[in-house]
Image 1 (cartoon, rainbow over the protein chains, first blue to last red):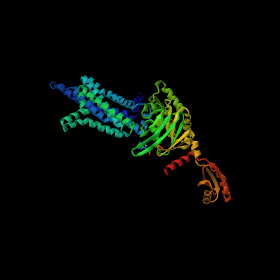
Image 2: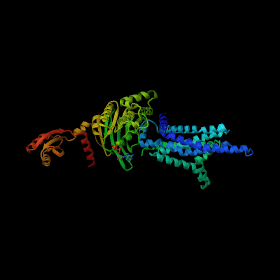
Image 3: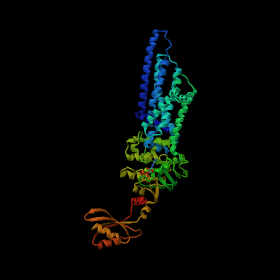
Image 4: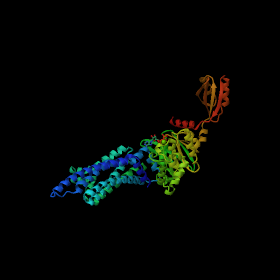
Length: 251
Length: 311
Ligand SMILES: Nc1ncnc2c1ncn2[C@@H]1O[C@H](COP(=O)(O)OP(=O)(O)OP(=O)(O)O)[C@@H](O)[C@H]1O
Ligand SMILES: [Mg+2]
C-alpha cells in the first residue's frame, strides 16, 4: 500500500528512525550487559559453592531486560509517532491527501502499519541479546517468546495512542510530550490502587499498561492481557479516526 | 458540472461565505476572483470535502460533495493554496504516490506519471527532491498531481501566486490547454490572469458574489474613460473639464514633465464627450498633447465592485 511505503520511506530517509533505533539498542545493550555481567559473577561464585543453587538466567537477566525495554519504549515510541499526522497538518499536505479518493481509515492504518513495522525491526534487532545468552547459558525459550509477544502488543498500544495524539495537534514536539505524558500515566495508573477504594483500585490496575505486561515476561499468556492491549489499541485508533473525520461533520 | 447553491460557511461568529450560488458548465474555465479574505479558499475547501458547509449545497457531476464525498473526490484534481507537497520526496516518486492514492492501476501508474511530467514540463526535475526545486517547478508539480488520474474537474487555488512573469504565462498556457476537456475553477486575485484564461468570472467579496459575467462584459459594462495629456495649469483644467456636460469625474494621474499633466476623464454611460473635451481645451488656450479613449481594465471593475461593497 502506497501510504505504508511512503511512511517507511520518510522514516528511513530522515535521521529519526536511525536515531531512535540506535538509542533503543544502546540502552537495551547497556542494561543487558550489566545484568549479564552481574549474572556471570554470581554464577561463578555459585560454582564454587554448589549448595547455593537455584539461580536462573531467565529471572536474573531476561526478565529485567524485558521490563527495562518496555520502559525505554515508553521514552522513545512517542518520537516515532509524533510526526505522523502533526507534520501533515502543519504543512497542509493532509488537506491535499484528504482530497484524494482515499478513506481516512486507509490513511490511518497505513501510517499505523508503517510505524509498527519500524517498531518490529527495532524489536527484531534486540533479539541479538537473548541469542547471546543462548550461547552461554540455557534459558527457557518459552518466556522469551511470550515476552516478545508482550512487547509487540505493548508497542502497538503505544503507537495507537501516539498516533491519536499526533492527529490532534500541528506541533510535533507537543505531540511527543503529550503522548509521553499520557503513556506514563497509563503506565503508572495502577499505583492509584493503594489509595483508591478496592473497587476503583481494581479498575485502575486493570487499566495499567504495566500491570498487563509483567505476566508476559514470566512466560504467562493470559487472554485477558492480550484482549486488553488489543482493545487499548483499537480504542485509540478509533479515536484517531473520529478526530480525522470530525471536520467532515456538519456543524 | 459544478453546482453551488446558497452556500454559507461560518467559523464561530465569522461568516466566511454568505449564501453564494453559481455553476460551472462542463469544459468551462471559471475565474473565481476576490481580494484577500473574500472566501475563495473556504468555498474551494467545501468543494473538495475538506469541511462541510454550514448550510446550502455543492454538487459535482450531480453528486453532493458532502454525502458522496468519495465519489466526488474521484472526479477532482485539487491544487491547494501554498502548494503543500512532500518536500522530502523526489518529484517522480511523489507523483507515483499520488497516482496510486488516486486509484490509478499499478500497471498504468508509470505511464501516467510520465504523461503528467511531460504535460507540465517537469522533465528537468523529475529526479530531484521537491523541497529543492524552484517555485515555478513546485507549482507545476502541484498541477501535475492535480491532473494525475485524469479527473474531469480541476480546482486550482491561486496557482500562479509568487511566480515570475514568464512562469505565469507558461502556467496560464498550461491551464488554458485544459479548456474544453476539463471543468476548471481557477481562484486568483491577479486579474489579467483570469481575463486571459477564463471564459467567465465570478467575483466574490466579503463572502458574497458581487459580479458574475464574461471578462468582456464586465469591462464593457463600466462607464468608459478618456485619457488626456494637456499642457496648462492643472487645477483650472480639472475644474473646467468637470463642468462639461456628460463628464462625471476628472482626476490627475501623472506629471510626465515638460509642464504637461495626464488626466483621466470618466464619462456617463453611452455619451461620447471627446469632441467637447478637445474643443474646450483648445478654446481655453491650453495645448492638447494626447487624447485616447480607454476601456477600463478588469482591475478597475474589480476595484470598483469591491470598494462599492465596502461603502
Ligand atoms: N479555519 C478557519 N477558521 C476561522 N476562520 C477562517 C478559517 N478559514 C478561513 N477563515 C476566515 O474566513 C475568511 C475567508 O477566508 P478565505 O481563506 O476563504 O479567503 P480567501 O478568499 O481564500 O483569501 P486569500 O486570497 O487571502 O487566500 C477570512 O476572514 C478568514 O480569516
Ligand atoms: Mg485563499
